[in-house]
Image 1: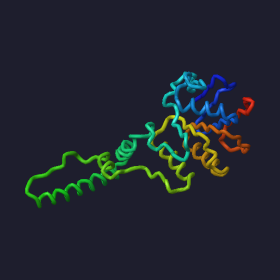
Image 2: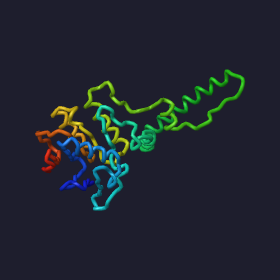
Image 3: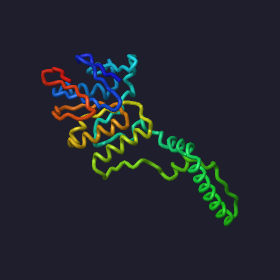
Image 4: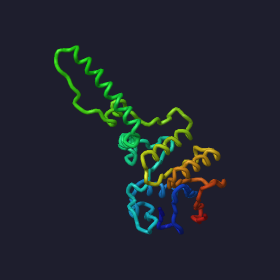
Length: 228
């Protein structure tokens, strides 16, 4: 995907597995760019921009990014991820015949045990729904482990893995993510993004003189001069 800001000399090219860092030293411009991308308003944003796919066709700015405006509060419940967990595991069960048979056998055994209890009371009882993977996962409050008590990098990596498991197609947008990572951790993050094949845009308000494998960078200094 290509991000083209009306006031920039060059577009921001996003490629799968190669995170692009946009460093903007001017605080006012940095704020405008952040507000614009997070607003998803495209040409109507405070800093107008447009998005283009690999075929050169313009795409909608709505839902183009999974936005992480606060890295310390990862959007596990974002609408781009929500509601797919049970579908994913139901699909996995359908692809694994051995596991599916084992689960259904256990479910039948559990139903039979409950039915035996029904003989101890006077009225007749029955299950209102057939057993299903989704119903089971919901009943057991099955969810992703967010690693909230773990180090930040571990939680971040788990979040990206979750995005991959849920089949995320959008690019990931981070705001000042490097603030919370050491140089070694940035490289580990980039390796994970490369492995998962995600498009990622990092908006940073400070210049980082270090160079990392897989990283692409655009810098706009205080005089609004661009360098790559």
